[in-house]
Length: 234
View 1 (cartoon, rainbow, N blue to C red):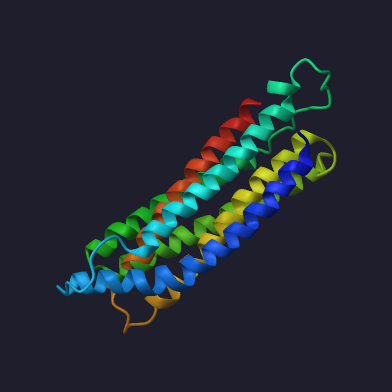
View 2: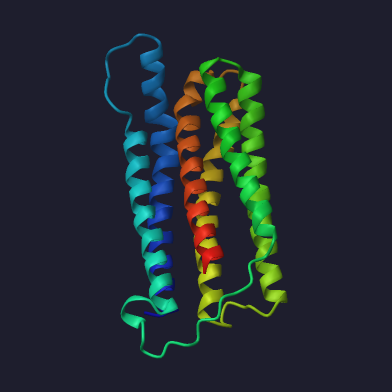
């Protein structure tokens, strides 16, 4: 097991991520799912059941859970556990973790909390609060991504490049894949923000989009906490 296996999985994950996020952001989240909620809110019974977007999101989360599970497994194997244990693997040298990662973690926690508050504000039909919490959630997510880039720069300055060793390479891959998924979520978040600025659009029409964004944010926060704990412990 080497870093090229991880890069192969990364490429596969990016392709799957692109196809699924494109479908979620252009079909289910913005059209089918919202229309279902609008019909239910108006008392129409022409269509019932779980919105397609909700099902698609859970399928998507299952796919990326498998992806991150593969990376974590490869991480432990490359460290010398499992089949590699006792066979002379001695090139694993843990990298020092940039302190800014703690700040980044706090930003992602705040981002997830703001998205949850936006979700609750939709139920209260408070348009101003929804818009404010959505903006705060996206802003904190952007600060998280900016902090991750700063962490990369600090690692490079400390002499840990992408090819300096397996531990450093895995750090870049794990944080990079997580960042890519967050960028995909920000694309849907941006569409929701743009729709919120249109007064003709009712809150109920963006309710499903905000709800699924919130679930996605909570999931990415959970993934990051697991990864962060893993990096700190090794």
